[in-house]
Image (cartoon, rainbow, N blue to C red):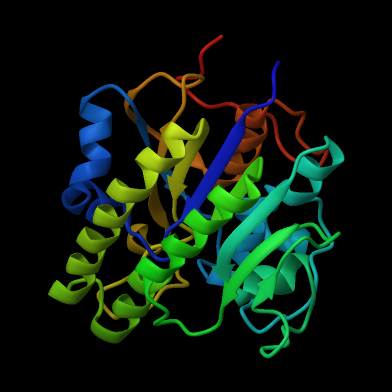
Length: 274
């Protein structure tokens, strides 16, 4: 299979039901038969750092060992960044600094690690932020710069403002819902750019958000998140079955045209084209 280029966008704390009701552009792609929509059940604990590692390595927290946001160390697993590079592909990320701490250097040195370009590290080119309120608009502009100037085969993007507003105002607030609308608007500007440059696009989330303004539990509000896939390799439409979060990394490998790591589970996703 010929290698393709993939953009993986993880919208921090994007609940499934709010994505369904407030992401008009993404659902326009579904209605126009350009995208597939899945319901993903996250691993637990439904916390950010453990689930960044789960999404990118397809291993559960008990296996990868990052079971708390307070564990600061490099990953011990084989991530999408590692697998891509092992197959001669280039990688990049516009993301929260915890991602750098998992794959490039830990702990993050604020005055040195924000801009990491042309590195012989799992993330070859990284633009990392360290304030939860860092504007998503700036983050997508960072990602656009990486697309235009570095043209990575695999690009990981991680906006934080939905999570930030969820913690400040709860998932039942107008602020949280309006932030999801704003994120959808940014995606409407960014995704066509990706498609024009020949990228497959996956949009998902690490965890949800509760009416208490938190996450980490076992309720659907904590764990159920969306996944939109824009690729000729996946049939468009809405899939009703619940998908394991461990399927995200094998899916990205499939879209990249490379074999997943041995530690990753088989890809068992409804709607894959033969």
